[in-house]
Length: 502
Image (cartoon, rainbow, N blue to C red):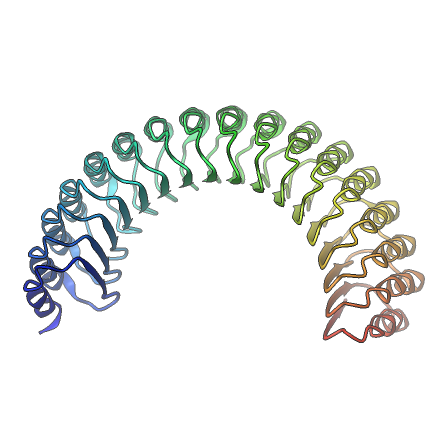
């Protein structure tokens, strides 16, 4: 009987209001999908429908059949349709889009068409279909890896422009072929969605460029009710002007509470980072911030501007800042430290400054800022491949001594020219962190000898509540290893102790 038989049976259930069918990876093919759709076409009273048909090779014929069925569901309020990996082409997706156009009472729509290579023609059709769904409040569309270009993205934007009642929108266009015009079309559409509260937009690995980013920023500046925003524009060649445009547009969104902004590998430079910093200064209601700017040619001025922006974010509770692989020196690191000094409500902090050119003065500036973050509970600091040296490590120890509420701490200080005095100074600071439960210390590629190992161990012996400890230490003689180990093992609460020596 199979799926077609199931469809025939469902055809009798004319009073159905709620239906969920999960038939993923069942090889139902085109005929099965068409038979299912034919039966469901009779269920005209459906209000809530969820169909999970991923990985079934339904092809154009099956998708078109589903579209014909959808055209009957004028009373549908909630629809979830997952069709990824189904060998659906332009005809099939167009059929789906035509069906959606009839579902004018939809309030919630989730559509997953990932990796079926629908192209511009079908994306345009989807845009036309969405234009009819003016009552949509919640919309999730996944069109990742579908060879969508400017025309398709622009038409999607045109469709979104009609959805003025949208409160929640998630749009995944990751790894397509969208350029400046497509991004501009999306920006224009978003400008109409003035009631948006939550937006997730993924345009990673397209080619929107500076003008595309400017248009997105301009569109988002209309979304003044945004509370939660996640914007992924990694590897899009937006450059300095694009980042400035984003910062300028987003600066209007003063009601943001949660922001994730991912701009990895976009060559935004100091001026671009400064533009983002200016926007950051306006987000005074931010509680959670994640900013990924690694590999962006940011130097001292850019980092200082970001620090200046952070100074205004006094209610931040959670901060993740990735500036790995830039050109930040002492002045830039100190600027970041000055900003962090104002974030006294921080509970969780992850700061990645690997592979920059930060020395002792920069470490001192960071430490001074951290000393103010007395409410920190979880802290991860990545400073690998810098040049903080002995004094820098001592400064960090001094700053951390104030963070007495830390329960989880990870310090990655690989290859920083730290010697005995530096390790001892850090140990002295850690001795104050008596509430530590979990600790990771990475000292590989430094110059720590007997005295440093002993000082580090003495400090850690004070952390009587430690339950998990991981130590990465290199170039140590057996006697040095034993000194650290013996002192660490004095903690009666220690459950897991990983020692890794090279």
